[in-house]
Image (cartoon, rainbow, N blue to C red; front, side, top):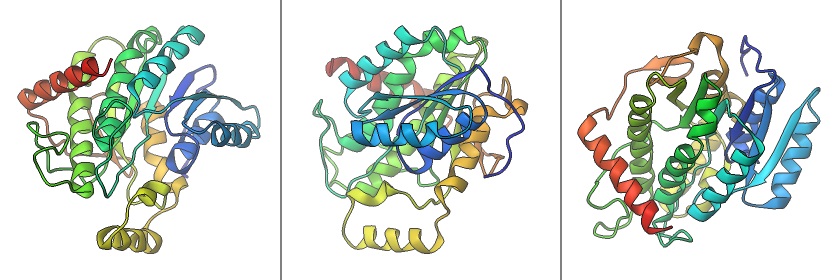
Length: 284
């Protein structure tokens, strides 16, 4: 991982999906920079194992809290717990993500990829806005992908369309990108930046829930050409911490370079924000 010329001593960060892969390496990088890092875990044993590993870093300060980002009641409980423990939050990295070959439902009865990659991060960010604002110079970093598209606001849950896990994943990453632009606009002048970071093609456990010919091809390509989680974490960590990005918001980054923004039309963004709010309200 490249050097990040900054210090985060005294700062507080939340990294979702911090028990493995890119998330654990982002958390490790933030710990090394001096931040107190809260990682989230669906599995308590994996969460504690990751905490112990990260706590071995010199001068580390790390804790773990339970969170299933696909379960909106779990998101609400987690956000309440963070707000009770921390008066401010300096960094929120929405890293947790998944895709599935077959159509599955979340605990709220929602299509699982949408719930995990879009609705969970959207709700979590909104519930943590008060502690983020209290930090006065906070950052929200949403992890996205070059695989983005197939977006259909009339069928976000693939009820009408034949289910295709790859398309559901691509749609979720487009939607998360759109929500980031909307968030950046809404928070302008409030001391909270919102940016997206693409980690690249990384060898992680993201493909563990998929099968079939396409999934097999992706797994082979990942083994042959994917970069390590350490390298994949480099750009998100840089976006979360680099001093030169203070106040920078509404931007897209890959390989530590700014990219051309996509999916920026404000009309569809506002429509998606309302669709997410309606689904989250119905699941309450």
